[in-house]
Image 1 (cartoon, one colour):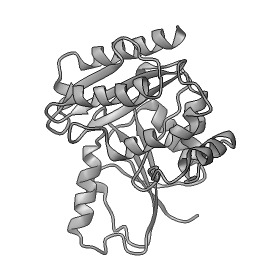
Image 2: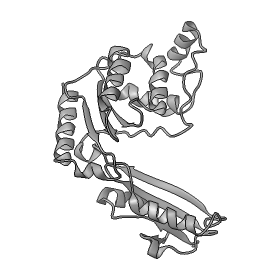
Image 3: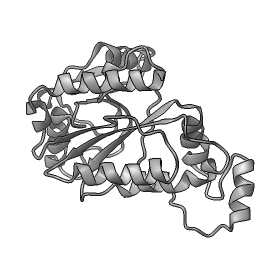
Image 4: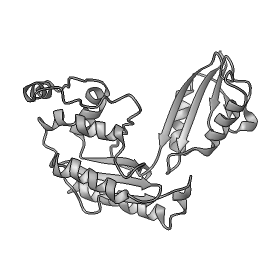
Length: 255
């Protein structure tokens, strides 16, 4: 059996621990939790099992990556790796619901360039497709079509929806021409470094409620200001606010 190194920084939840066990059940990996356990990782097979905190970070992982960087640009020479990531956010408070998480990474969604005529767009809509194809057709649009609600997780970098999420919204037109969104409910979590969460929330209302017709419920957005790494945990009663927000989601989708 070949050597496998499992890098799993910080203590993880029971649910993520089960995922990791299933992913590694055919191996006996050497486990690395901290920089103290970090061996020579050149010419190795590596599994990064990363569970992010509520702010989307994993500090021990950064410490490990910094240590590898200190070893020089060849610290992972000849190695191959896979990454398993889990992020809770509101998910832990939505037990019992059928949840599908969709991550929009750099380069995965090509923005609509407006090159199709109206008739062409209608044609692709009828075919449940889009000229630009990709993950939007394979995963995102089918998930939106079958969903009761969508929770948009919006980090606020410059008082605006990120370009990646805006590209998703732009590409939804092909689905909008075939499916009514009035029974699909809009929610959002917006985290800002300083201010401007209201600007992002208003953009979502304009793009998805007013323009696309998504149902807008009361208290649709949970907003927070966290201008330092991990400082979201210092917001008074943040866990209580997250639980109340999750209850509102459940209450509204049952309507």
